[in-house]
Length: 179
Image 1 (cartoon, one colour):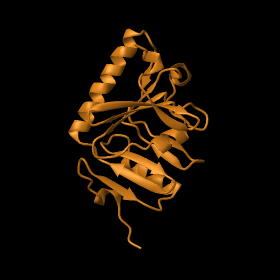
Image 2: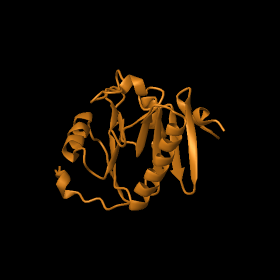
Image 3: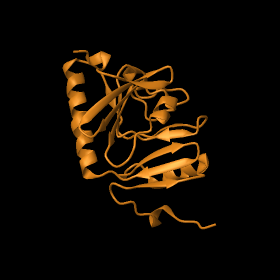
Image 4: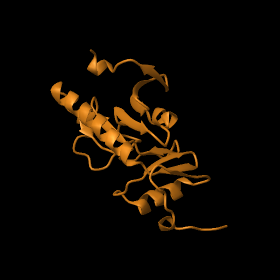
């Protein structure tokens, strides 16, 4: 068996690394070693860990869409909280993900002021935003965590998915922003 240290890995922007047979304890240790201030994103699903390094184009698109959503929510006088790429994990499900951006809207008051969130007791974000340029969205992970709405930008389209009976279905508009 070969053992590598994370500092030995170099994932260029726009690339991803898949690691198989990663235990939950190893996943937690990797998150700890990577730290909170980094440019990579992670997704974990039942032993498979994906580490992605976004391109500048990805980050620019994320910021534009996030800023538009924030402006719309402010115009509607709606309280909201953005938590960026906060890792959302559920030990029992063996699932974890860092969205490109996430919003607490309906559940903003429930998580307001909390320094740490626990997916066993706290609600998931109300909306997760994913920008797909070189990596892929993990809708099954978001669905398992119970994220009610997933926005995905792929190509020139923004697709809006709502969670219904444990699966995402595409909708033409967000009911909160009707019209």
